[in-house]
Length: 472
Image (cartoon, rainbow, N blue to C red; front, side, top):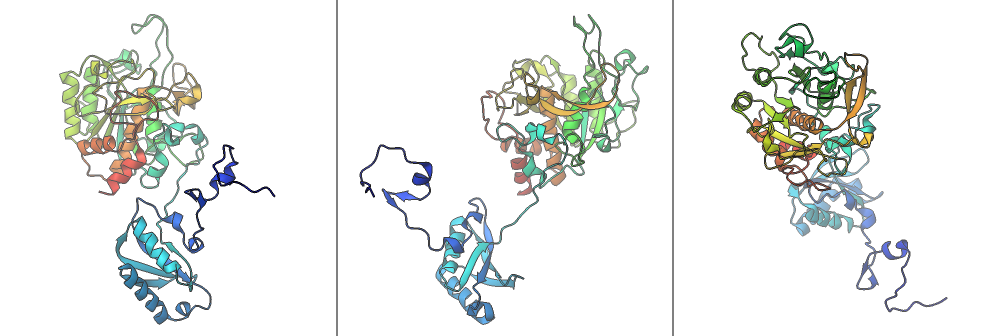
């Protein structure tokens, strides 16, 4: 057999030959003789450990005698400087041992190594805390990359193990809603604030029916040359906030146990600032002349809408009233690939202004940007359809028809991701103020995988935000 020289070789060795063993200074490291007796991978660097499971080998004195077991605990405690107490014996015959205080990863490993050096110890491991790993069974959840993909998703699965939106109310100030079996279970109350009957298409002014009658228009209408079909925009937004989830159907919602109050303000050719301002106040629980009180005041108000111009006094007054009533206001930054300071309500104070990212974590080509933007969230880009945001919709071209689903793009789609996250936070911390909520969402956003200049503090991170709030 050919002998290998100790000199460095220029050959590229197979991966298993170079990486299977730990190397140091050109020599192979000795295997850890205690590795088989310790579950070291279970030690998490960012966690503290207080309890450990120690099992003695068959026939060991410590296994047969409680006194012998306590003598070992005392010996380990004396050597490590850690107070140890026996909690109980498990059904498997192992002992559950508790330390006084909590140990970081290095200290926990040192304690485990001391136990493992004892010949009578079969194994030792930390008594870790396990959680559920919730994955929705909705038939099209796999297409909702914007929830779970690590590159540019909302990081929702971890958050869902802690919060589901229960008890939170989100007002969707938009085109209203259409009947959809994947959404209706979470719809409560609502109101139609469109005062102009031609815009409303329902033959009257304001009323208690928030159903979307369609926002389609014909040639040369609404300041446009070409016609457009109904968008069913409010239905899509509401589905992202709180579509029914884990029902083996369609899509999942961000805060799937929250409730949505549909507030209709947009119809043919959009909606008026005066109607929208009243709707904001009403949604938050404020009083509007001639309109019954809202029985379900919103914890969060979603406004995936906007117009040109810096924030005016009418918008700001309504928003300030809503925030004063305890409602967090989440708004779209706009889709003009321009500075959001020239658009309202994106540029208003006391709002969470949301830019949009694509599937690669870049600022979406259409998204507004600027110093008034607070955070970004997945908005998608439908040049490739599957890279858009999937949610509930209606199939009617003008008037409502059968229910369905569709991929949309826009800061309108990014905004309900943040509103849904706000509902998750409110469900675990009902007393959090709008200002505190905004601060937590911004503080726990993560860095962009791509390029998103002037997109606020980062890409919203649902799990990090919910975890941070729960640990306060």
